[in-house]
Image (cartoon, rainbow, N blue to C red; front, side):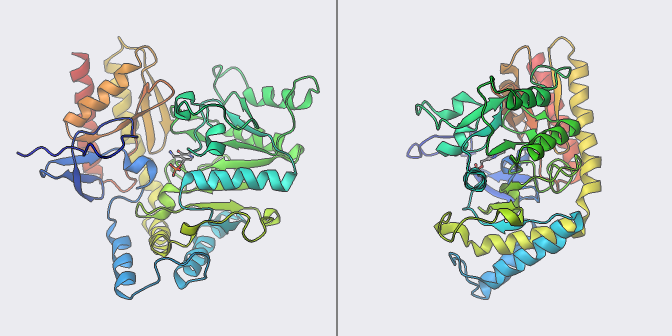
Length: 416
Ligand code: PMP
């Protein structure tokens, strides 16, 4: 069998090397150029919640292309864009009693974070942004400046000086309330912490090691912001669109951020797209103050609109909960059967993993052993110590079960 390898002419920016060349994909399966089958437990880092080549979305894209639909339109209104905006209001915001205007900040998660931080500064006239330990918000100078992981900064020198890092929920263990710590620092004129324009947070830190903020902590942070006219930004780029079980990851906590950042799976089909949701009173950018060439990606609007219909029709929430229990069951089994290692379960919903707290390198070893068995999975966390599972939400139960069994076997193999 011919083995296909990545070309050396590509600058290697990605951390790990899945040593093959992929060619085809359907729902949670991929095939490489030699025809070998893989199960996708990574889902494009959360960009493929509705599976590879979701047939409903694919058909809409084909129909649109066959009909010579506009593909690129900068800021022009198009039928595809208007339909997406209307259906987003009807299917997602109205049923949740949420009132946001939608901004297209550029095609990536980084773009929405950047727009959110700039907007908060313009609204409040303040410059500081409070962010959290182990946060990940993107790769531009602004978004990186709010990112906790020093390695990600790529040795590019000094970052923008306006971010203040605070301990995320659980940073000092469950007994220390870090929201109270933030509140104290904000109120103490001697703390050296200025009132910020915004607090930006992920409800679950995906890249930062699957740390889950409690609902109570999120509500307390919201109260702290409200009492001081600080804007609350939730970066739902990775956890949004169903990853944690509900469409927005903050729904369970019952909080209502001032600004929400969405990307990855909002594009429905792995197409680049991002949204910044803004409370209407903060719609203060003048035309031209935040724009970009690829904000009018109509293929994205077509795919995204159908993905919303799919989400609403398929009643995925119940299914996600059931399948999330299966993931949890397999991971618990792995930890229980290998009590000799220091490990803990992390995450929630459709993003769960094992943190190898004693020997971080076991996470990479597990991913490599799983890949040998045809499973694509990844690590996260500041020491790459978490082996994480995040399949498409649409994965068939039977395939999920088989894939999980392979991961269990992979674990046994590295421990034997
Ligand atoms: N925010 C979060 C929470 C993310 O997980 C990511 C990507 N992993 C980003 C922002 C940046 O998104 P992008 O890679 O599309 O710029």
